[in-house]
Image (cartoon, rainbow, N blue to C red; front, side, top):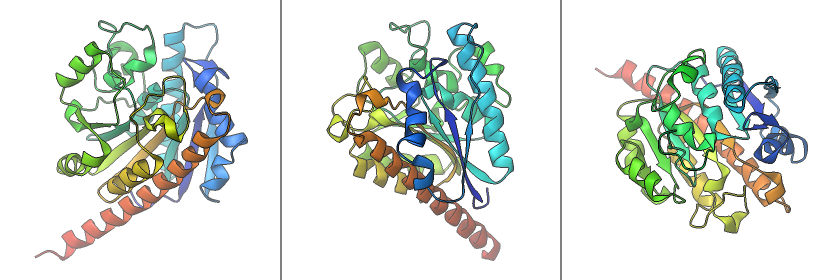
Length: 295
């Protein structure tokens, strides 16, 4: 992708398909209370995914949102703009990745949790903890196939950073998979290995990857997370190696952040994503020039 002409901020202000509850309030709070769009530049357009049919079941609403989101992401890319999704839930990844329509996409996923459950092993009944397993093709086959442009991402092309709050069955499932699970300090070798297979990545930041000492992103925040500075450094490493095709910042519940510390961190992360995007496009341009001049 050429250097983006601007940024498309796409708000998905829903939690489990319902508006204005829990983490679904996060995107609106960031945009309206904390000036998120203006903080990222003067070339930012904002779109909001329309509310799903409230009469439909929860799971149907979530996949309805994914189908709508895929169209907005596709449109942003066609216009030469970087899609940055602000979403209540991590399952927004399904619509975002579908909108990219990439044949070989890497995923770098920052999260305190694995989001790698399937309906067969899940114990909580919380659909959002199945986001990454659905993205990699382990479950919800018929519904994920209903999202225009959806393609599974290979487990081996996923790097999971910062996951620590895991039940024994969740840890066992991850260990049996090909997902690369790393701490931020060990990220570079994993990125270099992924770079051998793909140039494009989807960048996913669940704000509870941050340590609670930075503030509480949501009720699921867990100790042992990254600092804001560590997350910024990780995003720089990604930008030095990849084209960021799309990104997401998710799982912010303003009720857990009375002093706005995590909202400020989200703005910092958004700026770092923009810088990573520019770094990636410069790297790609340099690679193309190098190939043209090679004997």
